[in-house]
Image 1 (cartoon, rainbow, N blue to C red):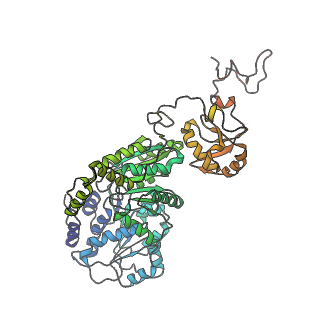
Image 2: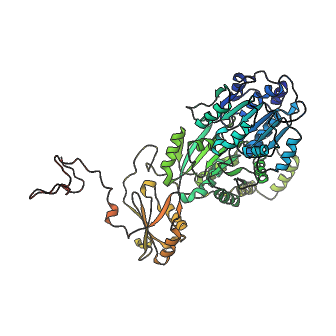
Image 3: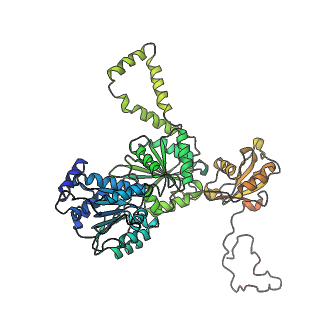
Length: 591
């Protein structure tokens, strides 16, 4: 379907960029939104909405003309939640309005405000900025809003989530009341609807999001991993898929720093994005991703909002999203513009129930498994190498001469082996992981099966005896219900208590807790280091002593129906039993 009639200058710009037909959101705003109507649009990031509203307000700014007149106070103001998205919008509008002599100015946090002040003073037609910086320019008198004809709020839900409500209201109150207000948001929650009622006039409501259908271009994968192997699991997922672009999400700046350093140390071309970086550092990181110098970006949720990265085929949730919206927003960075993408949730074994609830709330269908094994990655490497286009190309004349020189005195097998070694040298080595997905039926298994009943697991030393004598017992607040296993419990205990493996004695895993023994010489140090320490909800507490028979009993059952005539506190009849004495042994109920 071709574009509806639009300004000829913009039509030529679209053709130059290879736009042959509009996306659904572009089609909707052009057909349903007249040149003077306010718009309230539900649209996901990656749906082409920037070009959509750029086309929508062209008639308001230009009318029938193809070029702007001299620059003065801005005619259009676009507000975006983050620096990266604002600069991205600025770039999109720059090529769209390239043939109109439009003067665009960006006003974002982290840039030199004096340079922005000079650019505003020199005159502009369209200003793009972040709420805080725009408000600052308004308060200082640098930004004149008297000539505004259009105000666009891009990703309004994100701006409200980030706490920009007061800044947005300040900007809208300072704008002429007769302006057009175009509000774009992924969801129209109550706060968005309230904002729209206050600042829009008879807005056209456009919904371009299919509410009951998951994103068909994203393949969701949930991988069970041991809590202490999350970092290694990220390595194996990156190596297994070998995507041209990958985005790895963490919750905190510290986690981003640590994981980024670890990936770079292993040989990945990776960059980091977090709020602590300067604007220059963030710009360089994004440029490295766009031109292919980096293939992995480790980022916090805030830093990655609104990013549109080319060839982003893989999203990894190194730490589980906090809610449904976060899962969908993170995953929505891939599978854009008709391309396929993969979203991988790394699920610590003790947080599987949380992950299942999250996936169910998001309405997506995820395939569960363990993390990619080193063997499967090496197999994929072999397949990728044999299919590498470089092996099918015709040799250049100078390459053919060098090839003949190599063949003199060397066999084809020797040369092929050297090629294989060179190919492997550029690839980070995969990690050997505990396969948390190999177990069937555990807590929260997809088939709903209950975990089979097992006796408590005991980690013993050589000869069948505990590794320490007279050890001090501690407990962890997880057990078989969270797929506890000594293979990943031992490294976890070492980290929480700053001990080494030889300091750990017997480990006994029960239904909802795990008890373990620490050598006497390390017990005091372990108790001090582990006090208040926590990792993924796992905490260490002192245990009263070694596990006894009571630890093996089943949890108490609910009491059965009381006998007829039961009265609390009644005295026993002569020769009879009191009402609270057991009848017929533990767990038996009166028929």
